[in-house]
Length: 594
Image 1 (cartoon, rainbow, N blue to C red):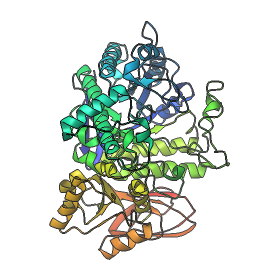
Image 2 (cartoon, helix red, strand yellow):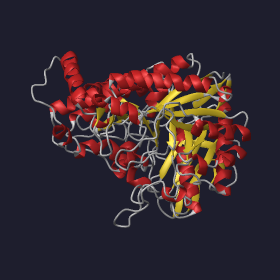
Image 3 (cartoon, helix red, strand yellow):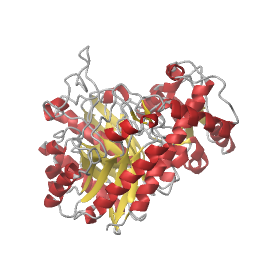
Image 4 (cartoon, rainbow, N blue to C red):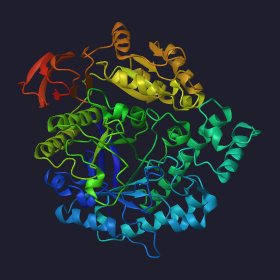
């Protein structure tokens, strides 16, 4: 069996496989029959995430979408065929492939019928409550059975780790969108409320209370309760998985979207409970979907990624980058899905998040932007080719091959002498509990983070609880919560103690625009690479520029570097502190700094 763990080297993350370091760059797809595993294998990719699920029921209870044909435990006898056919197909083409089963821990229909008290109502039938004790126990039993089968199979020596998923869209959100609310859940909440805060819920909490946008203290407590319960559910399954693999392989999950999701009833704000867990090695999220992934802006991180590094975890980012080849999923699986779900355009003819750029050139730019964002921030990437065929292009694949070569070679690149981001943006996940649901204050983080991405000044994202561990590396702090938690207030006091200047949002000013941020930061001595509203990434010895307009772009480096063009520019190698380029709108250019 392979032995794997996360290892950082020269500021970059790697997965150690039997002592050999592999940069975390992988490929996956929902529609394996339309996937292009062979293309990625030919271009030197060896790391693949392969989907497998306990059930073939929907992962999205609004659209009723499911990518699975076969649920392993839907029938009397387990059926592993859907998973194993694609694993063996990959291994035939790439015998030394590293396989990561992506396990959907979602209960079969028979279990739901027999355990109705352990479920919640959704628009498409009842689904498991994510903190039901019976779900935890029976889900663990299924998980052990599945992993035992995988570890005894003929492909066991190619299994390098696991990602486990669950809940709505496999991202551990509640199937009912409102905190897995049920009679059983309400009883657990009241018990938790009394034990943790000594309070008795004298007013009966209802689903209407949860839906109401006005601030309600009991709803706020329920939001905290649900995040804590979700985090503990995740750790429960992570512990089971780690025991199944004798603590010898990496285990990861989707969770902790505290820099993007602001709804407390989705349960994603319990990262603090499990960030130190010895059972979880990596956390994942997609690139942020701000403005439907429009070009010309930063697609930020949903997670305070700097905190993950502080706690020696990997941020393994799902880069589901749409391209000019992206088509309706109904075209990839004709007759499988209704025509009115997951559309490319809305009722007004506007492009949705499911629509890719119109040209190959813009598609290349989008992929490069996602890549350099994560390379400079020290994160891993898997290319999520959802419906298959999104990257089926010679030029795209050549780019992806080069990206892997650059990332792999970066293990020997010492980043100590390179300019680091001087600004930290603090994420205060408990502060969401202080806001009326759906209020303008809930959006302070997203807006300020997106604006900062176009300021021309690189920045880090960190949880307020880790302020003491990061402030010695920063010259300026941004606080994004208008109504901070106690941890947020403590982080502000630490800035004062260490004489770190900072700005904070408030109920009167709940976000900052890019021009304001740039002016404030430059006046405080923070280096600005470019003041033209372009997206700038710089870190780990690499620099990326993504433009908002046609014309000349001038990049001011903090000191002289030898620069080498990697993507998007034909400029010769030179030693300089200034880069001047003529670029088209939405171009992405990447340089290596020596």
